[in-house]
Length: 219
View (spheres, rainbow, N blue to C red):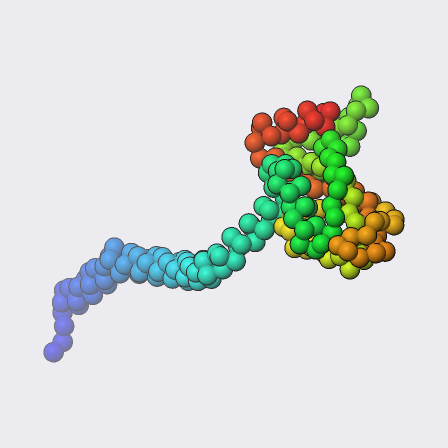
């Protein structure tokens, strides 16, 4: 059926209005929804990544927890090797106990004043501008000089030195070892004597212990 000019104008106008309505719907409803969906997807991806990182961290912590007893044992050994107090009476008794266990005779035990052996931090001068030793901030480490005369057979002395350095827990550094002839020990002739000079170390944890060691060292 032929359409009049008016009818064609109505049809074109209706098509234009329909297209305009679709455009408005896209701009105000579809496009924002797509943006929201993209944002949600991005947040979901970030949450999944964070969850994956947390899961890996949890597994790492679980593994560290399994090794907690090992770490605690290592810490205990380190604390025994470098104690926070001088503990000299106990250590001197330990030397006598090692002598008894190895049938070596330990005598003439003497203890010298402590020495501050704290390392100066990297880049800091070891000597101050006035020529005195630089003051080191933070924890200090002191060396206690201990001398002892130990006599016995070569086998007994070897056992004594082995237990001193590997069995008893405290870290010691033998700085001087002089060998000479000694009296008979444990009913055996041909004994040998050793004059030992060693250093036992202490890292004071309290201000009182720090002050006491500092005063004894003359610093």
